[in-house]
View 1: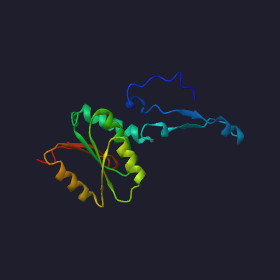
View 2 (view 1 turned 60 degrees about the horizontal axis):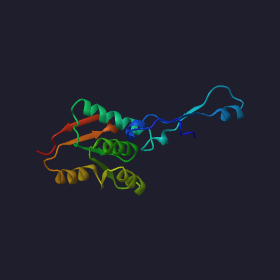
View 3 (view 1 turned 135 degrees about the vertical axis):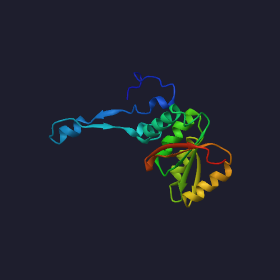
Amino acid sequence: MNTSCLPLARSILDVIGRTPLVELTRSIESRGLSGRLLVKLEYFSPGGSKKDRIALEIIREARASGELHPGQTVVELTSGNTGTGLAVVCRALGNPFVALISRGNSVERVRQMEAFGAEVIIGAHLAAAWRLLAEREAGATIAFLACDSGLKYLSTDLFP
């Protein structure tokens, strides 16, 4: 890959959504087909998946609406790529990120989120993990994101 023509990114956020698109010409020709086959290499995203795009947009929308403030903690019940994407975005923007994950997730997933700055709380059940976080963060304002359930974001004073 010729990197001399790639623009310099000022932030890790600048490369989210700018993953390479590659044409697989030989795959088409070797099968005697016509047309174009293009593949998007999302594994080149900072968190390794297309979920980085979702995470960035959710956090940007929450900040733009005033629902999420600089330094406010973001919490996500996650088991995978969305949590990793949120870890990347939150770290870059200065929002602490807590990933609540159930037992049984891979050690590699936990280490990856931690490498991006997430605090990972492993619990057998969501309620237990949430209670643990609530006890620790008493008095804090938490922004809770539940991306996979369709709720984009909810920011509230959960612990008066």
